[in-house]
Image 1 (spheres, rainbow, N blue to C red):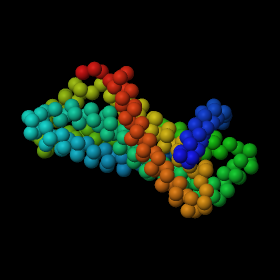
Image 2: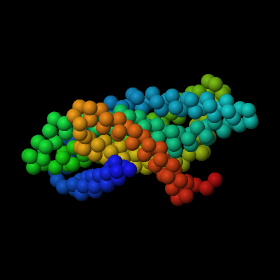
Image 3: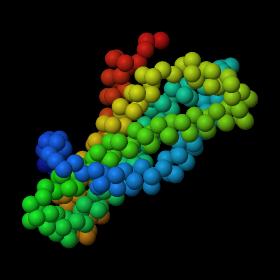
Length: 252
């Protein structure tokens, strides 16, 4: 309980400090672009493979499940909605939390252990502006783009499986998906990833900045970030979905 309270307070304090120092010049363009390359470009192949596999498996499961009730023709609608609203944002965020969140935490924790953070403070520079803000902005900008690509590839995978396994034509799949999907479905999925990205980045940075116990503490910090980020993503997804159902999604 004590550790949870300490994390909650530290998370809120670091969030406010990052928001405050975001508007203090100079803007960290170069570090942010470097972090975007590390988050976005280096994660692209993993995200695309996962998106393709997710879309294929969902089409297969929906297809054979609905075939018992003669509802195979509903596969395009169900698959496209599930990918855009839930599977794309959640799976992509979990992958980024595991790959990038742990990397951020271990990198910052290593800087803390080797006293590089103290050196930054000694030079009169804010560690938040130098370390936290570039990673936060890079994560917030990169994760929605990765999710969009994962959604697109997931729909392609679902369409291919629907054609091969369920004998659903490409034109029919596309027509039913376009008939079902709205901009609200796309934008709410993107909005979820912004919230997820904020928590992943702030959690990784806070845990890294407060790492202790030497090299063993670096490993513990990395594990904590992945676990905490994954839990938050799953819990926040429920509440965000509930909010969007009430306020945004069209009533069918």
